[in-house]
Image 1 (cartoon, one colour):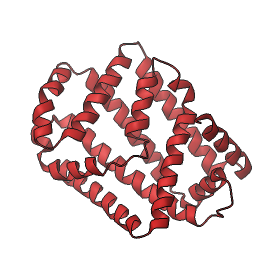
Image 2 (cartoon, one colour):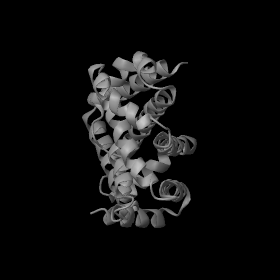
Image 3 (spheres, rainbow, N blue to C red):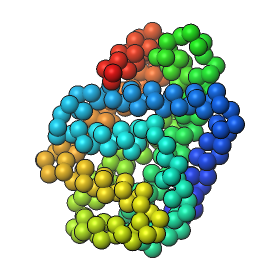
Image 4 (cartoon, rainbow, N blue to C red):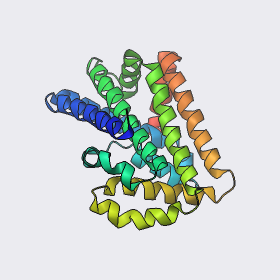
Length: 246
């Protein structure tokens, strides 16, 4: 399957899941709450990085573009519309990054949808940390969670590699108008913002690698806690992390 078809199928799956949620308001509300909690959890997990001027932009980029509860339907629509022309406008490496972004988006939506269903099955009187933990364990899919993290890391490494590719910064700037005219403004925004953010971080020796390693370690540890720590300990830690974001 080529990159364009992969992107189409990924976004088609996202659209299918959102349509199912639209016909089930309680599920839609549960999925929105799951996404909001995950964004809040990310802010709590990386509260120290958000206070560090050196890595705050990269942390904010991950929060806004990869862990946000926001509505990406406009970006999705663009991706479907322009999937076939990506390869004629952007370099191959950039097209691969767009494919990874689409795959990550699909897998995240699948997991959030399943979490929403499991959330509704929990006692509504329980704490949100308890409901989230039990929903996580009911969904399971440890391999999918590891793949989700792997794609997040891949995007970070791709963007870092782009900043070290001679001439790519100039090319991205030159592509701004053609990309928008072709209906690729959302992808162009993601690439430019990511390029600028990681480019600034890359000017500090070892800063990008340190940031990505930190995310990898903390996210992997969180998964281990959510899957295997005693329930009470897991709920306590999650509640504390959520509290740090407030």
